[in-house]
Length: 295
Image 1 (cartoon, rainbow, N blue to C red):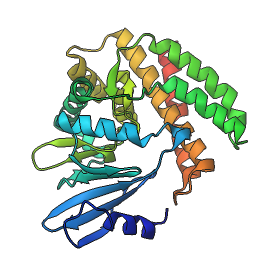
Image 2 (cartoon, rainbow, N blue to C red; image 1 turned 180 degrees about the vertical axis):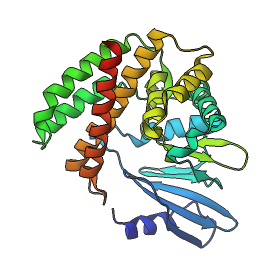
Image 3 (cartoon, rainbow, N blue to C red; image 1 turned 120 degrees about the vertical axis):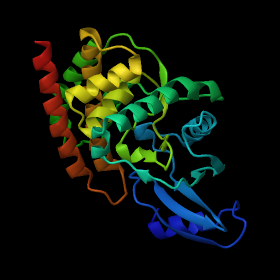
């Protein structure tokens, strides 16, 4: 879908009360985001089809978006149809990586994550997907082999590391995870924080969101300890550190292999090759540190 077609579709929706003004919003590498002004109110229109190779199913995104709205952690859904989601616009700014360096901000975001994990499930209806990162990694590897990706020579080694990480994570507690905690998916309004973009939402270990937030924001060890203490209500012991570090590595590997698959499947104008190399290097450093600490 071209940006021009996305604008045309967004402005032509039946939910508008009168003539609208619209323009593209920054962000989104699996969908188009359009800001629409209808009278005195503003809305965000998300346009995107299912992406089976990434496990993105728009019915799942809609179900979790509605539950997240009911739990008070996400903007309201005001209209939906296949491939289209219209949300209330929240006057806010998206966080950047450096925002999480502030201890108060980190604690507030950690509280938002825990609220999401514990309260959103109370409002879910119907079927909802799971998001088990180790299954996803194996499935990505199979897709890359089928498509003869340039990364095939790396896959045997990466899958061996995947098995090492899964064993280190061990048994898990299931919560409703966001599973894509880039700082850009966390909004700060004048009085609170919000989570947006539920494409990858599904049942998962809480450690995936915590590890993903840390790796995406470059948190240091002290900040990670504060985050884990705030979430679990006690200082992390050696067992929690081991499981957390393994899941953090897995979240980085998933982002890397997501990009590898996107190199050969996405038609959006984005430099996935560069994104792959950036995340592969981050993953390798993280995995080497994990092995060093467990030696």
